[in-house]
Amino acid sequence: GAGVSQSPSNKVTEKGKDVELRCDPISGHTALYWYRQSLGQGLEFLIYFQGNSAPDKSGLPSDRFSAERTGGSVSTLTIQRTQQEDSAVYLCASSQGLAMGEKLFFGSGTQLSVL
Amino acid sequence: ILNVEQSPQSLHVQEGDSTNFTCSFPSSNFYALHWYRWETAKSPEALFVMTLNGDEKKKGRISATLNTKEGYSYLYIKGSQPEDSATYLCASKRNQGAQKLVFGQGTRLTINP
Image (cartoon, rainbow over all chains, first blue to last red; front, side, top):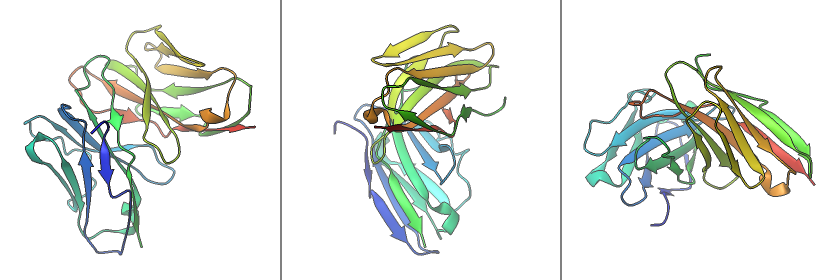
């Protein structure tokens, strides 16, 4: 597609349920990022994928969070046993890599609400 | 400064007025500074990527300056219009090898008609 696509745009779930968020990056972009913004907070880095390299998972807040990227393209962020503090906007971004001058292209996000 | 900090957190400006806000970032191991605009119900969109001390970039009525030695960047909007209402995010990339951007909390700008 022309831009980064995320689905669903909104997700309401009950505490304790699992959720899957999907990101379809721009074709040809080797780098893919997940960030989230909780109410009143800045964008928080979660995980980064670059080509076939091992992902940088240093931002995942707990072992309930996991992500995969299949075939170097689509990525899925999974949150198991959701908690109310997981409520946030989850943003996916892709780029050709953060070499000098490169910028991130963001999707429109998934608004996750955990009741 | 260890984190990226933006001020003010929110700002209300009359249409036609000019405004500016600040991003402070770690000056050590600096590599690049990004500015993004995030309008409600849309995707964050890149405004500028700045790498050189003293750099100034301009896009229409919006411009930005960069001081890497003291660790700050200013974003200026001249003659504010209602469509400028958005959250403005800055993000710092440290080290050439680092592959993640560290974002500030953003400045939420509202233009009053």
